[in-house]
Image 1 (cartoon, rainbow, N blue to C red):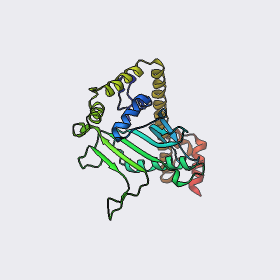
Image 2 (image 1 turned 90 degrees about the vertical axis):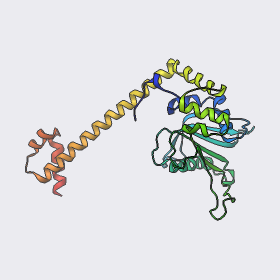
Image 3 (image 1 turned 180 degrees about the horizontal axis):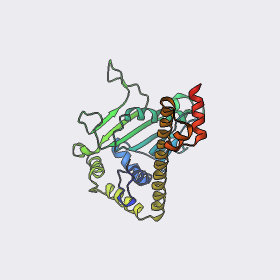
Image 4 (image 1 turned 120 degrees about the vertical axis):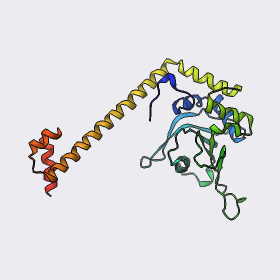
Length: 271
């Protein structure tokens, strides 16, 4: 993964997407137009939200997670928005796991299954990962014997291929998708998004946080490379122990691995 400079970030970068769509005045109309629904009250969306229902299960990091709630604060529907620029070959499985984690969190307090609410996983992609040429793919569980029979488990997975923006029938959704594909803002909704991107680029605090993020990524990569080189050296030591009659001192001088470590590995080889 190439880390962009802060000035080069745009709405299709997950960090910028998360920042911009954590604003309710941007996320709510976007979700409403995409799904053709009306949201009464959307809680402030959470960028890079991490959910996990216990310490033993892998948590997930959502680009943007939002909930529609009633007057009592109870969840009516939940929405996960994902800007996915790369086909990682496991997006359907990821969507499945994202929904399972969200369900696990919802039931972690001992609620009944009937308390599970509508849940939408929304992927925004430039690539048609299904290869059938559609601009949108809507998935829900149906009976094979009669596709008019739905499971009614209230889970929905939608994939929007924004590079096919010309094929979207809804003009507002088409404009959103066009903005993601071309960065051209044609309507008020996308102009608002574009203005928010510019706002964050001028925010020195956000810039500083991103620079810290860049450094952390660079450092982790360097550490990963160092670990990889160390592993390669140990593999070379093992090979020399197994296939040569070199002394520990000679192997150490060639590999750079300390003699005491080589002695330990020689003992392990002799067992």
